[in-house]
Amino acid sequence: MLVCVSFPALAEIDLSGSWTSKNHEDNLERGAGPNPDDWAGLPFNESGRAKALSFSQSIISMPERICWFQTQWHVAAGPFSLKIWSESDPLTGKIVAWVLGGWETRAPMTIWMDGRPHPSKNAPHDQTGFTTGEWNGDVLTAYTTHLKTGYIRRNGAPSSDEATITTTFMRHGDMMTLALVMEDPVYLTEPYILTRSYISTATPVAVAGPPCIVGFEGVEEGRVPHYLPGKNPFVDEMDKIYHIPREASLGGAETMYPAFRDKMKDKFVIPPKCTRNCGVAPGAGN
Amino acid sequence: MALAPLLLAQPPGGRGGPPPNPKAAAPIDLTGYWVSIVTEDWRYRMVTPAPGDYQSVPMTMAAIKIADAWDPAKDEAAGDQCKSYGAPAVLRVPEHLHITWQDDQTLRLETDAGKQTRLFHFGDWKNPDPGPTLQGDSLAQWEIQRAGPRPVNGSLKVTTSHLKAGYLRKNGVPYSENAGLVEYYDLVKERSGDVLLVVTVVVTDPQYLREPFIISSHFKKQAGDTGWNPTACSARW
Image 1 (cartoon, helix red, strand yellow):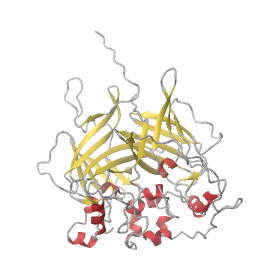
Image 2 (cartoon, one colour):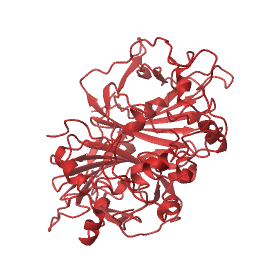
Image 3 (cartoon, one colour):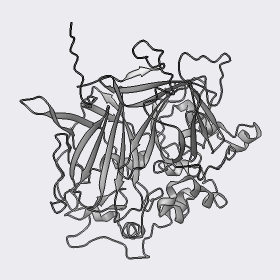
Image 4 (tube, chains in turn yellow, red):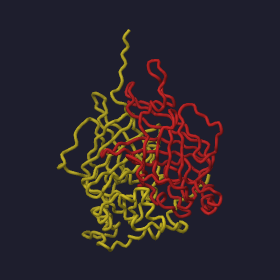
């Protein structure tokens, strides 16, 4: 007797559903926002650092920027949970795309799985970008191009319109870890890597926030808040609060690696007791 | 379609032969030298955070009370300089890893920072003299992803018990001897060709954590032992 058994050409796994973001790392940076001029661990080049130093937080209160979207990097830089679903071909049932629902500050990410090519390099760029994906076993890898300029930290660390993002989805039962790798030849000397973890939840995650309405936030039309070279008042903020020296807080690839600690070891003094942003949630008791 | 990965402490044999041992059946190669890439929680990892800075950790009030009493001098006097190098925290330390097969059933992970050694035992291993110890007892399983009979990818799941109490962070954020640890080791290949090791860590502790503490750390594969610099544990740095 001949027994025919068919196997899928490639292993795949279902990513659909609502996923709660576990903000147990970089909680302050992803939530309320990072400290000014905290770029430690960012593989900046001189251009990236110079542009970041010109950043004034008030720039996002410009009328034309109040409703400005973040790029897809905000999946890693923001605090939000995910809703993921698939889009199928109605005739074949084959999945043609996976979609990460958007937030009020980030457009949905559509990951095309049907083999379509990325657009011409001359095609328009936007904050959403263009993303394709492929499976390697149960691991989905998505590649995003055609992004507009944006921020990789919400304190002015920039990304350019040549930046690309590779996002790897690794599911382990009810848990999923995303590894996001940004490459940017304009502002980075090495890939910038963040990993984030999520837990599957039965509570639906909303895929859009309230509509953004432009209002006056203190920056009159026509003014572009910024700091001129050498005039950024927060350049030693991390030293004052955390005793992290300027050579570390201003970033650079070497600040990502363990050997950089040797440069700080002899000078470092443990800061005094934490008095703000200490992270102790009210009612933390059992 | 959804395919559940096969969880294999001892991989199956094929065509009646003996099952391949875990080393031979490894769906991914974790061996070699790896270096931490510290892009997350930088101020909690690269320097010693301020006393009382517990950002991101879902601590209980009991944990806060313990952490508020953190005194590195006391730890040094007690010979407890390694409390922040226990299994739940050691991969968060900026460091190099050296991973090798100790034998066909045991994967060995060494760190240069704090000079720690962890052993991941496959199969039905049991410690005849269970801890508690700083690195605990770790049982390992391959999660093998197959397309039909052919393995195409996979990851390593490690479950650790019998832990001695320690710190999740250098500034005294505690975990207790009741803590449990589950880790997933995945490889990610960058477009540049670099290979990343991503370790997702889940720490549970009914005494000191309000919910599972979940973080993920990443390491870059090195061609050799560049930068390998064994250093003793420190309670202050």
